[in-house]
Amino acid sequence: MTAAFKPYVRIVEQPASKAMRFRYECEGRSGGSILGANSTSVNKTYPSIEIVGYAGDAVVIISCVTKDSPYCPHPHKLIGTDCQHGVCKKVFNTEQMPLAFKNLSVQYVKKKNIESALKEREAMRIDPFRTGFNHRSKTSAIDLYSLRLCFQVFIDDKKGGFTNPLNPVVSEPIYEKKAMSELEICRVCSCTASVDGGTENILLCEKIVKDDILIRFYEKKNDQIIWEDYGSFEITDVHKQTAIAFTTPPYRIKNITEPVEVFIQLKRPSDGLLSEPVPFRYSPSISDDEQLKRKIDSSSRKFLRMQELQQHKNQLNISGIKQESENVQSPYQPCTSSMHNRSFQQGSERSKAHVDQYNNPNVGTHLATEYGFKTNQNLQMPYSYNIIN
Image (cartoon, rainbow, N blue to C red; front, side, top):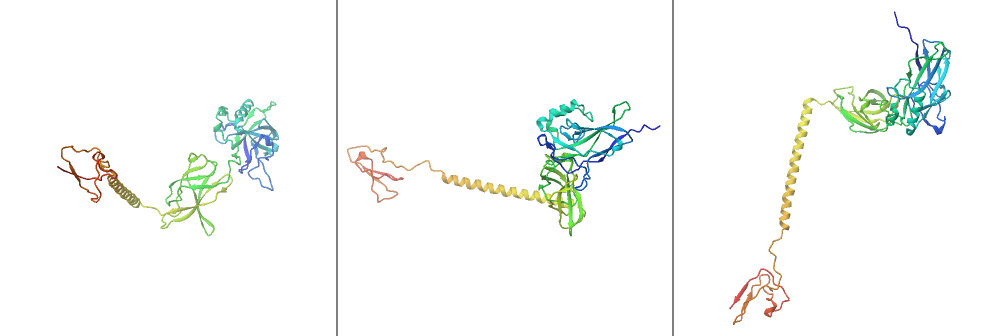
């Protein structure tokens, strides 16, 4: 015995992957409608659904939910035909399928109005996946530049109402243009890697969507792409939407003997946009013995450099000591006084003194004034006295 078949909702036409403007309330509906993924300038298409396994009347409710699972109610509103209070509601018959929504636009809700917008949604009991509304107090965790459309379909219960819900389905992400800026590589920390791949690296870039970005490696010859591969990283390796920690893919040839020039660039899968390429180089593989030798050589160079620095430091210390010793003055300063501290015993006989002129014997002797000598010139040390009786 097989279980009874249950009808389900299928999205026939996804929203366009190209970013669109989320319009502020003051702008009205000047932003235009959400286009379909296959829309062209000649033939415009729109998001469309159909019900599989059911014929008759039904009601569809379309609301905005967060891009990441679990899909919580998103504060942004839908405006257009059949829309009220940020939600679209339409009664239709399966004969109209696939049912296209030609007049839907996204209205941007400012951060300060997030809580009130979600309270309004809660009052309407629009919570497709029953996740609750606790996230309204964590406004910083809500991405205001991306969302998904959620389609809730209720089929006729044959009792005058639409109380039979089908499982809700969500569309592919819709991005605001601010989040989908032009791709640009600002810097790659190292533009070389081994042909073996697995080299860790960091790429700095302009703001990106962390789950809608790839790091593409490729090689050209005669204007033809002869090889391409992609760097490896997880969503958690994207920091602040401006830096990616990744590992390089292996090069197509392992036994190269000379470096090979390739290119690296960012790629956005949702719309295929590519950044300007940056040159990148693959180097020949290094054997374990060669790696060990390089480590030893590096350690030796470091040791020799440390020795040189120590010798230089010692030389500076020695020269400093010499200079300091030359600048030290003797504690015995030459006398420049007029010998007022020296005296001779006065006796019956005249004492005669002879001063040895050490520095300049031609200069006359000058003694203290109390002995009747001139004092217009100081004595120069060293000197000696010869006392004559």
